[in-house]
Length: 245
Image (cartoon, rainbow, N blue to C red):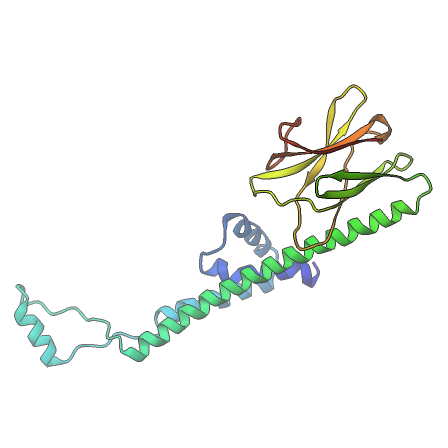
């Protein structure tokens, strides 16, 4: 396992030790711990630190005068008073600081995870853009313009190598419970899903390969609709665009 493959497990250990890791990530980490000695040692170190924090302030006995005063007010005056924790202002401040540090550690790990997700999305866009450039160099690649309201772009298709790419600019943002779905259109009008698309507002254009389970030469058009998150078996939402090729 490389360092970058190993890093997500190390980052999840503090949250796992605090019981703040979601079930899916916790299951993945537990499976990893069975084969990774260094991560098990790291988990033991975090748990040892957490246990020490809980007992870092030993209990103190109240003064004799205070004990007698309390005993006189209790119905069971003959029973010894229970020891109490004596929290001074400085100790409360230290405890709060420790809790804040632990919370900041978890927040930092969440920010690192979000940054990794953004980097993965950017890498996908770079790879998809490179695929589009390669297709443009093929002599058999055909390009069809897309124009629908504020949406512009192109559909690249190479039936010889069975590749197709959508290049879109101005794809509107939609709620999380919805997604864009690409449809390949057969001569008889039947639609076959060509993949799901999520718009990205932080990039100027979107490059998306179109997935096909059969030869692209069997289709005569391509379109896009708005569907529920996860996609649909057949178009159910409003049409975004359609072109024939």
